[in-house]
Amino acid sequence: MNTIKLPFYVRVSILLIGIYVLIAMLYVTQEIMIPVIFGTMIAIVLHPVVSFFVRKKVGRIWAIVLTMFLTFLLFVAFGTFLFSQISLFSASFPALIEKFSSLINQTITWASAYFSLNPDKINTWISQTTDWLINMGSSAVGQTLVTVGNSLVLLFLIPVYVIMVLYYQPLLLEFVHRLFGATHHSMVSNIISQIKIVIQRYLSGLVIEAVIVAILNSVGLLILGIDYAIVLGILGALLNVIPYLGGIIAVALPMMIALVTKDSAWFAVYVLILYLIIQFIDNNLIVPKVVASKVRINALISVVVVIAFGALWGIPGMFLSIPIVAIVKVICDHIDPLKPWGLLLGDTMPGDE
Image 1 (spheres, rainbow, N blue to C red):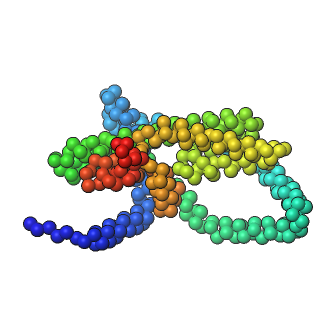
Image 2 (image 1 turned 90 degrees about the horizontal axis):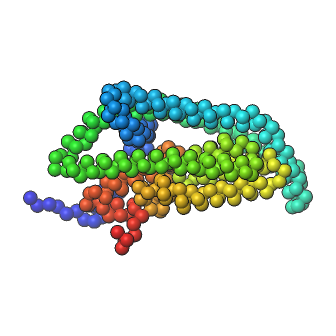
């Protein structure tokens, strides 16, 4: 049979159209795909626990129920602790607002004297800016309610998907094996095994990283004498899980607390220095040793996919971007025609292989 070799520009055009259609489908189906992917990843992490109970002669259904119950208790315990800390913070929130307003007034007085500006003009500008922000916030209330509603739906759907994936795992694996035929059984099994390892070690590594960063944040803030050090440290660690951008956001809140609760603005600088040191430790010691040891994605691809998935799916997309690309890399590394793409995604330089 004669095969038709398409010109290069035709193949590139087909590839670009395929990528466009794929991105459009991912965007349109995000409300379905996001909880399914989250549920599948969590199910992969919990699968060893289910297998442990099954090996202890516990029925598969009861093993899944017991695993989900223990996971629920863990989340409830963490949520209760975090809520208690946030309640302490919220109780003194009005006082913090009052101090922050006083700080703004002092800043206006200093700026008007130093730059020879009229304080009334500065106050008018701040008032206009505040009104503009309030109007923007009012117009966004509907969208915010929709977002909150979608988040609640996700919180309900994800455990359902976790249970379903755990229960139907043998069926799903058998489907994948039959889909690619007996001739590729060994390769498919190897790919699935590698994907499970990548997901389990990446997510468990993120949890370990978050715990270490939370401890470092809290201890550092306690040494500096910053109020609400524990809750700020935990929130900073949770925000730090969002690749690249979360760490930048995490430092803003403790700096503001330092400004309004301390007599000297230098404490805000100390907080910034503290978080920069912790970020350096995290990026150069914790992440390479704990998180990225089995997710070998180069920095350029990481930044691009985090921004791209953030534009596509928002914050959930930023979180999912690295494991999704890691899965794609595992697949590319095991299929000969796709190995150049695996090389592009990885962090192994030519000559170091």
